Length: 255
Image 1: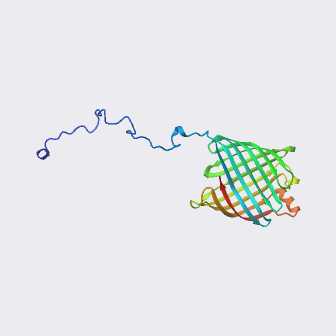
Image 2: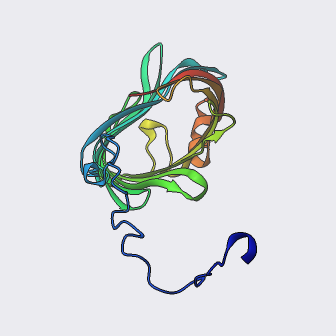
């Protein structure tokens, strides 16, 4: 090596003092950031209000108890912490709407994925109209189950409760299977609305939808309602069905 290349002096492998210009103090090395509107941290504002309307179910049904149309909708306006929240569900046939309600809440975030809700509910359709004060919680449970639990207090010492759970099983990027389950209970008999105290009904559904876009998704499925306890006894005495199964077809819209 010394004969061919001349003497070579090896420096230390580590240690010593680095030259002053070995590293630029500017970590970007002078490269200007890309211009992407809204992506800078100072542009993000979780207090900015936004609005959403979701028609989760807009469908026709046909079953043992007849045929008609039903809906389930919700919408909200506000920010990540506080929202004005609207919900409505019900069904109608040739004679008009029956067993329907509308709710309006102030929704406040109390934890990641969880809100408390305080507001009012109004029943309309068959039977007398009922007005309720409502309070509850809703959110996303572990394993991505959407849960909603609401208690109601009405005139004359009436009380009621509703618990709902649903899940979205993504079979492909566009094909989604959505099971759901709902339980309803009443604190006292309500003969005029054909309900008795206790757990009054269980409702379920299994819908398969295809998302052409997130905003437009037609679906088909099956739904059922089963009356329980004293409400089932009352229905049997009146000659009404205790269990009703239906085929459904509809569309899910998101604005």
